[in-house]
Length: 87
Image 1: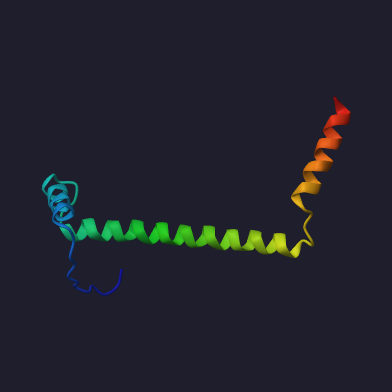
Image 2: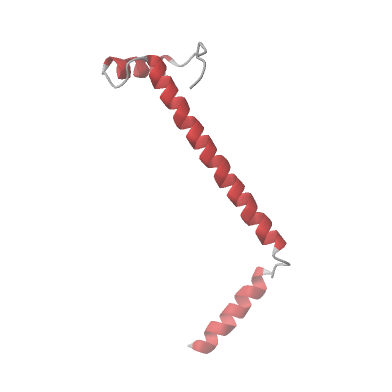
């Protein structure tokens, strides 16, 4: 983990009480452990969101780079014609 730095945080009373109860219940040894785990989860979620956003941007770029689009009305008209003749 590297060097340890002390920080002071402020949170709503209800959240602080939930953290204290979690420690008192034995799930964690200290409030610092609760906060560290929450920050690790937040970091993982943030990284996943960034990967998803990058993938979305790549998909949009691939779509834009694939050439000109076809108007939706034209596509649906062609589909209706195609499926009308198959029944």
